[in-house]
Structure formats: C-alpha cells, structure tokens
Length: 331
Ligand SMILES: Nc1ncnc2c1ncn2[C@@H]1O[C@H](COP(=O)(O)OP(=O)(O)OP(=O)(O)O)[C@@H](O)[C@H]1O
Ligand SMILES: [Mg+2]
Image 1 (cartoon, rainbow, N blue to C red):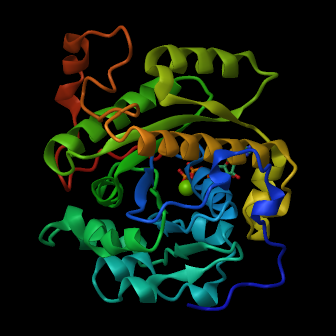
Image 2 (cartoon, rainbow, N blue to C red; image 1 turned 60 degrees about the vertical axis):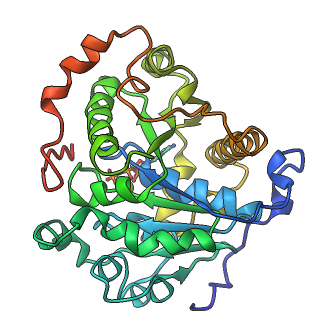
C-alpha cells in the first residue's frame, strides 16, 4: 500500500476520552460490513462514512471505506489525490484488480479506502448484462472482513445497481436521515428496497441504525422530524444526533475528515459519540450473542411502530423492479 500522508495531523486514541468501552482491545475475527445508504442526495452519507470510519480507526479499529459513488466524495474527503485514484472500486467490481491492489492508505492510521474513479459512473450500465451482477461487490470485498474490523460502504444517491451491490455485500445498513421536511417519505422508499434485497438477495441484511444528521437546534422542524422519526422507528434511531456544523462542511475541501480538521467542534464530537454507540452495541452483542436488538430487516421490523401489517403491505406494489431496476431518486 502507498505510504500514509505524513504532513497532516493524525488522530489517535489519546485524543478521545478514555472512559469509552471502545478503549478495549479490538476483538479478532470477522469484521462487519456496513452500507451507508439513503437514495436521497445530500443527507450526509459520505460525511457519516468518512467520520464514523475515522472515529472507529482512532480507537484502534481497522477500518475500510469503500467509495461506491461515482462522485468520489468519500475519496476526496479522505484526501486521496488524483494520482492515487487511477484504479479503484470499478476495477475491483470487474475483477480487474485484487482487493490488495485496490486498497489505498489515508492520513488516518488504520483507515484505508478503495477509491472511486470516473469509470464507476459507467458501471450501472456496463454491469447490467453481467451474470450475478448484484453479487460483484460482495465477492470482491468478502475477504476484507479478515483484516478489517469495519468496512463502510459509501453508497451513491440512487437505488440502482451500485447501491444494490452495496446492500448485497453488507451485513447491515446505516441510514443517515437529514432533519428536514418529508424525511420519512424518502425513508419509506429505502425501506421497500431493503425489503426486496432481504427477500431476494441478502436475507442476512439487518438495520444497523438510523442517524439523524444536520440537526439544527434553532430550527423547530429539526426537533419535529426527530420526534417523528423516533416515534416511528424507536430504538433503531441512535441517541446521537449529528448537528449542522460549518466545520463539518469545510473539512472535505481540505481533504480531511472533520475529526482531523477540528477535533473539538460539535460535529467531530458527535461522530465520536456515534462510534461509541456502535461499539457499545457490538460489545453487548458479543456478551449476548443471541440478542437481535438491531433486528432483522424484515418488512415487519422496519414497519413504523403502530403501523399495521396491511399498511406495510400496501407499500409493496411499488417495490424495486429487480436487480437492474432503476428506481433512483437522486434529488
Ligand atoms: N453535519 C453537517 N453540518 C454541516 N454540513 C454538513 C453536515 N453533514 C454534511 N454536510 C454537508 O452537506 C453536504 C452533503 O453531505 P454529504 O456529501 O455527506 O451527503 P451525501 O448523502 O453523501 O450526498 P450524496 O447523496 O450527493 O452522495 C456536503 O456539502 C457536506 O459537507
Ligand atoms: Mg455521498
């Protein structure tokens, strides 16, 4: 792998409070693959993937970010300059490079990325005729769980073949939800897609959780959306809320996760808190391996609390058409 960038400050375990359970040594064994997905654009998928990954790496976890978005924002935000983006996810999906060849180091110790290249924008069309087209990413990154504790897949803002590959490859889905008008409407489309993936391609897929992003405490709408989402999805919504914070939006133009750009800002602290919640839940699952507190992503598990099975079924008719079905909504 290429050398790390050494001229940027690095975040270390010492930067974080030592009271967190994540201060324990990482548990060896199979890592987890988490798809960060929401077909709605600009809700904080990439920001969450980059900064959650950084916070997990900062406490000693080995983390990989897979940039599955042709926009390449995760690669840019992690400071991968164009010279190190000659090959990446696209080549890996097509089997033209190995996992080892695809990995690029970042400035964060323990955090690698598989960058996105321009070619990835053609992938939706090019992969359509391939056999097992929805399994390509799963096959390509399966072995990554031997060497990474967490693999975070940054999905594009559409429910096309790339996102489908992300959901088929993943153990769980983490859904960033922006605190804005109609946030729940967009979520129901994603839930229907996830239902389809669990029933057809990846029955093991579970919901990692829903994280509220860009929360503005001065805006009453933010708290109304938060209340709404929590009353529908209960404990599947993280306690941690990511605030709207200008430092978060500045960091990508410096090619840094916000945790490197300004560790003390509220955005960085929120992502550290989110990582802590995830690590705590993982620690609990290890103690009680048979618990399923994140739940399976069956239609029932994602049905809003209080909704009936019939209401849930009524949504079914507009499910994603199939592995090549394009129900994208990149708004
Ligand atoms: N907590 C935040 N506070 C302020 N700005 C934020 C925050 N989170 C994200 N942003 C900004 O909002 C914009 C969209 O965020 P981001 O790129 O993470 O969303 P996305 O869901 O990945 O978008 P896309 O769907 O285009 O991939 C970016 O300019 C980002 O810097
Ligand atoms: Mg993005």
